[in-house]
Amino acid sequence: MNKLLWILILFILFSCERNKSDSIVINNTIIDDNKNVSVIKEVETTPFDASSTDFNYLDRNRFEYFETIETPDINFSLIQVTNCKIAADFSLPDISSMHTGLGSDLPQSLITKNHILRGWHDEFYVVLKLDIDKEKPITFIAKNSISEYFYPDEIKINELSNIYNEDEIYGYYFQIIFEHKPWLNNNENIWNIIVKSGDKEIINESINTNFFYLLFNELDSSPFIKNNLSVVKVNNDYNYMFKTEDTDIIVIYYSFPVRFLPYTIYRPILYLLPNKINSDFTNINISWSSEQLKGVYYIRRYKLNNLPIGIEETIIIDNINVI
Image 1 (cartoon, rainbow, N blue to C red):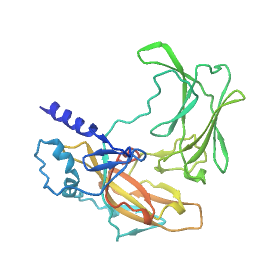
Image 2 (cartoon, rainbow, N blue to C red):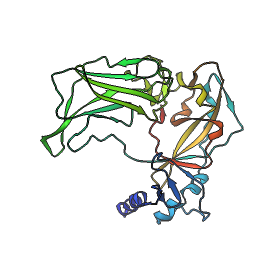
Image 3 (cartoon, one colour):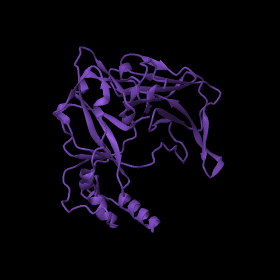
């Protein structure tokens, strides 16, 4: 019976209908393909029955169920912050994060163009055609409006083969750890990536994507050093740096698993107004100063004219685990 129920859950989550505007409609939730984020503007008012085995009904009413879940009795005021003010007059909705297995799958067909794939975390996958000269050195360069950065280590390429037949080679690839640090780039999310084989340029792409903003224990000066942290410890100090003009308020969320459903609630527990300074970037120091604060958190930046108006449904993978 348990297996049957989970099959029903998976069927509901992946059963969707594509409308004329290329949006996905899941029950009464509209998800923009380009953003993978939805805002719940309307929720049915039928009372939620947690004992129901009708998982289609359960899925439609999960947002009412969220409201019935009480915030744990944790003194979140023990989170210590500097260079900002704690605001008490804000109240934003929860975020609903779908559970999913994420990863960057390499192509499983003949490579016809040299290109770059963005990984789900701090990495790029550089995919190369079969005609690459393996004897020539590979150079990887990341440029922005301020400066350019050369990958310092020797790059070795790997065969990209058929997972069922290793003798069938589709091309080659290599992986580069690339950590976006906002203080290295005034254009924020825009990087120009150049790959050379010997003296010949084989890739020149502009990467404009939403890089993660996690916590740092050091503010180093290389995008090829992994320094941001998804796991932090209590009673330690961490840096959260961001572009000053793009941020009016920072919201710290605390997560709750949702019983019966493959979702996690992220509930706002602290609103921070950064001290505006005459600088491109602002740094807030954050410390979880008590054992009772252990758990999973998420930090998001907003402009005051673009605050969420309803429960968002999205996928959060840049959360922070406090241990």
